[in-house]
Image 1 (cartoon, one colour):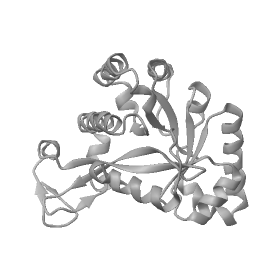
Image 2: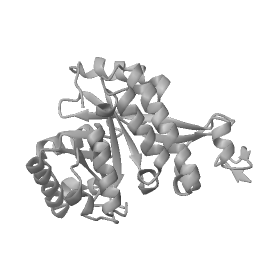
Image 3: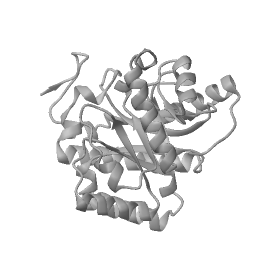
Length: 264
């Protein structure tokens, strides 16, 4: 028996979550240095029968058990295709993937099929791989094949507690995302600032994007922009919202800042 955080709703099995459409994919905007929305990151949410929405942190098996994780990733790709069609390729979408996905033949075959039937779609899809991923030659080869299909890869959680440099060295990345834990009090911490500057320097040398995740205020945005960060994500713009509410979010933000149209 799975009890929801609300204390009122229950389900028998995690597989019921998918059969009853309790798993949803939300989207959080990513902005460039000119405050244009250029991309959206997909974030999984779980809803209960009383209508409340919860983070997947409450439902760890959805993230860790192979079969359940594969269902989540399949749902993410479904939503990504809907998203790209809805906005006609105007925005990119980023999807978190794991070693489970990269080793999943069904997942790889579907991406290959997408690249053949919808050749424009791969350029709008950015896969985020975590530093926690155990990278080996087989993983690197599969990722390089997907890059050849047109998909992009960024490194997530950089300088988290599980840091490793292997993905940076072995894979041609599209960008590196600074872990949000690094941004806590970064403006008053010289050691943190030095590390962030080192990441920015590397990204500039490699001609890839440096992302800042967990940007909470406009002051933080402007300070990070001044340091050289070029992509920003966080509550200073918006929390993640459902696909149905994206139009409202985009319209509200563009009216507020009168931004120009841009692409990731």
